Image 1: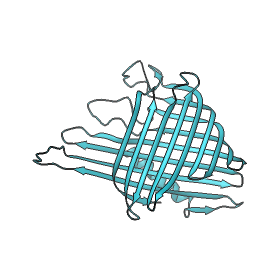
Image 2: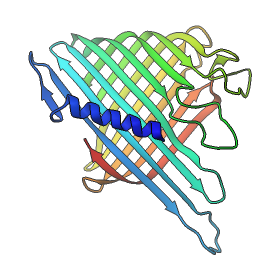
Image 3: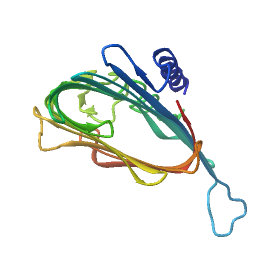
Image 4: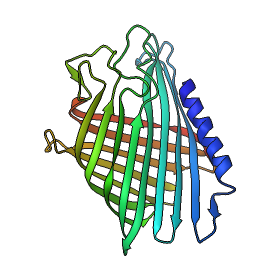
Length: 283
C-alpha cells in the first residue's frame, strides 16, 4: 500500500510541475492536454442475528486515471496512467485484494494522411503487492510479473476518445522473480529458474470513450496480442470497461468490469467486477 501511495504522490507532483492548467499552450503551436481523476470506492455489508443469512464484509478501492497528451503540427504523443488498489475483508477471513494494477500506455504518432499516423507504442503493466495473506506467499508481487510491450505500427486516431493502434512487429518481455515458489514448471510463461520470457508478435490497442446519456460515460480499453513464436492462434485479450454515473461533481456510482485471457497465466477467462459509490477528485 505504501508503494501505491508513493505512485500517487509522484503523479500529483508531476502534474503540479508540468501543468499550469488543464491545457497549456507552448511555443510553435505545441499543446499539452493533461487531466485525471482520483476515485475512492467503499462498500459495506453488516449482518447481526439476520435469520435470512449473510456475512458481514467491507471493501474499499482507490484509483487514478490520468492522461497527458501532446500535439505539435504533425506529431502527437498520447499517454495514459492507470493505478488502482482495492481490498476486501469478509468476517473471519483474511484480507484479500479486489484490485491491483499499475499500467502505462504511451503512443507516439507522426501524421500520415487523414486520421492515420505512423506510430510507435509502449505498454507497461504490473501490480503493487502479493496476495496479502500472511500465511502464504503467492507468485505475484511488485514487478513480478511485469509486462513490457513496444513496437512500430500505424495509428488511427479520430480524437483523444476514439483511437486504434496496430503494431504487427511487437516485442514483449515478461519479468518475474525467479526465487519465488512456482506452482508448476512455469508460470506467466516464464520457465522455472528463469526471470524473463521474450516474445515477438502482433498487438492491437483500442480506446473508446463516449457518453451514454447526460452524466453517464463509458470508457472501453481493449488490448490484443498474438505471439508469433508460440501458439499464435491463442490471442491474449485484456478488456476493461469503466461505467461512471455522476451524481454531482464529487460523487459518482462506478461499475468497472475487466476480462483477461492469457493462457500462460490461466487456462480460461479471468474476470473482475467492481461496483460501488465513489468520491471523485479531478486534477
